[in-house]
Image (cartoon, rainbow over all chains, first blue to last red; front, side):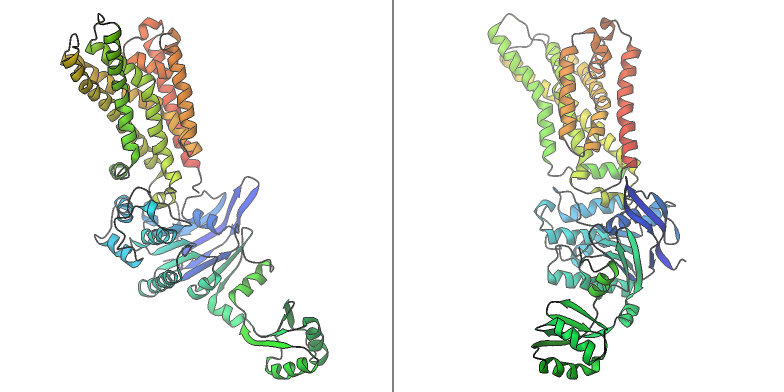
Amino acid sequence: MSEYVIETVGLTKRFGEQIGVSSLDLHVPRGKIYGLMGRNGAGKTTSMRMVLNLVRPTKGTILLFGQEHKKQQARTYRRIGSLIETPGFYENLTGPENLRILARLRGEHRKDSIDRALDIVGLSDQNDKVFSNYSLGMKQRLGIAAAIMHEPELLILDEPINGLDPIGIHEIRNFFLALRKEKGTTIFISSHVLSELEQLADIIGVMHEGRLLEEVNMAELHKRNRQYVEFAVSNVNTAALLLERQFKTTDYTVCDDRTIRLYDDLDRRGEINRCFVESNLCVTEITVSEEKLEDYFSGLIGGRGIG
Amino acid sequence: MASLIYCELLKLKRSRMLLISFLGGVVTPMMMIVDAVKIHYSDPTTAITLESLYHSCSLYSMLLVGLIVSTVIAAYLFSREHTERTLKIILTIPVSKHSFIASKFIMLLMWVTALSAISWASMFVFALPYHAVFGIAEFDVAVAVRYLGEMLLGGVLLFLTISPFAFLALWTKGLVVPIIAATSITMGNAALTNEALGALYPWTASYLLVHGSIAQTGYSYALAAGLVAFVSILGFLASVVYFQQEDIK
């Protein structure tokens, strides 16, 4: 049995002259939650579509459960549940009717699978409402219900929390975590909400301009991330000058016109504060923190913001 | 395949297209009766026969109204998954693209022939009160039964010749282009129905084939049937090849 549920080798997609995804080598291990990060247009959705056989790769190989994805497609894809962007359903049908169509086409399902899935996503009391009358959040919930109703071994979810309210996000997050823990379900998820991935993912893959820049284990990332002390001051230039002259350190970054972040001499922050104050700087805030996923992400793609 | 077709039927629940297509099937016989009433009052000596009613009904169904209504149905069936963005959820079940397209064409065939049957039945139903009030000469059920076969065959040929419009719906992912194309083809039908060249125009030729009028045009049955088959196969192949190659957004 392969260690990876999804593995891609040199996966590439071109749209005419434009490169959507370039030489992607993904490794999604069994039983883990893999978070795919990237700005808009980074190639996350195209990669997921290729894995789901919705988009034909220009070149490269996709291995699902250890075998080439086009071999025994019916058997392989039955083990997968997916949600790609905003889900589409038949507008004139209710949620249960839509799920019944999918169950019928899938052929094999437990009798109570539809009710169970609707119950999990909190739609069990909306059985008479047609899909066209659903709110964005309800549509997303139905999409998640469709993805999980056949208890797949692998879930591929593109921006699954779009449109969900905070309580809904919390519920769905806990559900995904429970799925991984109790059933060993592998989850391949993309999200723009980095804090969400931070709370969910075991492994993070960062994509930028069609390329996978890094695959990193979250535990390793936390270990690697450095602690810092952040000063909110009235003049960052003077503060920088003082750090270099008085404390002989250049291991700092100026975040904006009132914040400076120091990575060295964290234990001397009291001393540094006194020095700032004695030099007529107004210090309004001192925070000791660790680099967040957002910092890591911005640093990796060149600090050009998050799409 | 049976599941796919069953699901196509399930998808029609609460669909307005069912009512629209039913009205489309009923409108031609209704027009025939309105025309018969007008003739009765303008020229009472003209005898209205069940044969003439069915003949006109079949003509207008195949060449004018039926072609447009069937194209609307084809466009609805083939563009629906794109409009409602359901392809990504259906194909990842997985459902093969070939089976999916095949089920759409089978559904279209069922719908178009059902529409022909509705036109045939409503022609008879509308003719009954007309016969009771004004009288229809040679009101014979055998005539109606003979036309049932003709109209059903007409429905099958109509299905074959609208396959290019199904492709247009797949390609443009909407109803507008196929309906414009069907309207243009209908104008060609109107121009060529009484012309010998109609045998070379597949949409008119299919009507001439059903009514055994090809010989009068001077062209062979084989040529007319070959042209109908050519257009039909072109539409099927284009649909299958295009859908197979298409990336699903």
